[in-house]
Length: 172
Image (cartoon, rainbow, N blue to C red):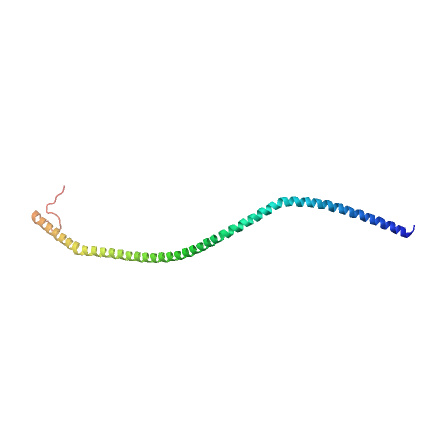
């Protein structure tokens, strides 16, 4: 056999082998395609309703946002105005409370001074009263006691010696 026949036989065998490999690849690809088509149909039957529901949900959400957006903007504007008003009124209240506390503190100081002056005047009045009324009464009382002792001595007529003992010594 010559080289040419061997070459043709080897080439023919390679072509047949290549054809068998291509046939196997075709069958595997065809089987894979059928399986992918089945999965695709199943996936489409399950996902398509979800996508439609998602689209409907997005549409409803979009409509809801379109309807509520002005209301939300109004609510946010009102909240901003309320916050600003509350802050302003809180500051005014703080100023008023501070002024009230200052006035109350001043009035407390004035009341304390008034009370202190009143107590001082009561003490002064008591001292003057004691000096002007009680001193003469004490003097009059002393004079009256002296007169009483003098009269008692005069009417009892018991003479006592200068040392303060009676003349008749009485021992019991």
